[in-house]
Image 1 (cartoon, helix red, strand yellow):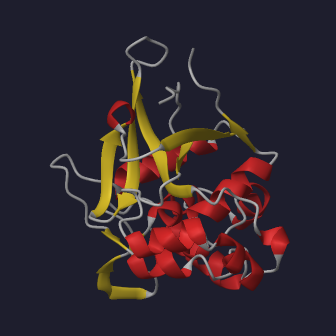
Image 2 (cartoon, helix red, strand yellow; image 1 turned 120 degrees about the vertical axis):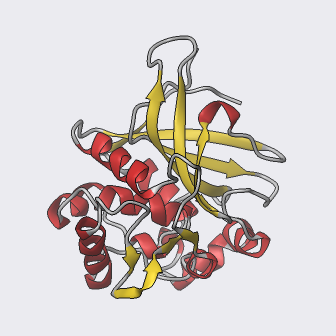
Length: 235
């Protein structure tokens, strides 16, 4: 598997050819994401909506980098998996079956470190536990919902900004009594970024509805954006 020299805030995308991935946590969800992308895109605007890789099955954000620039360089990833929001070393990021990775970097220097800070704040505590749970329902429905940055998406982005400093993650949207929000992988990484940007900036660099953006659609957005650039593998 390729190795990457990462920076805090980089987004990692994972691709599977066998329809099974740890990140999504549900085989049925992954089946939708990997076998039915054409049907999903048709429901969301025709063939023009099918822009991401059908094998894109997981997303994570780089929270911190250890010994940057050294041969021993490694990174901590924070991601939403079936058991909640967890952290893992990039060096031990392994999946069953045939997998590949890609890393994308936003070309606005001050934003990625702030998004990485949100990921650390919302992520696991020093004891390795997290208050945030995995949203299997939204993960499955995201394939068929619109990912556009409309009124609902703007309201949720404002909610993420309001609670960007909340240890363990924000409350469930507009339901303070319901506990911490549940998220899936691509929703989590988008929310971390939208928590540190105003709507005008989001509209330029990450104009997506976090709750309704599947890994496949996020992959397509990053690949066609002038603001996100792929990070070449090391060596």
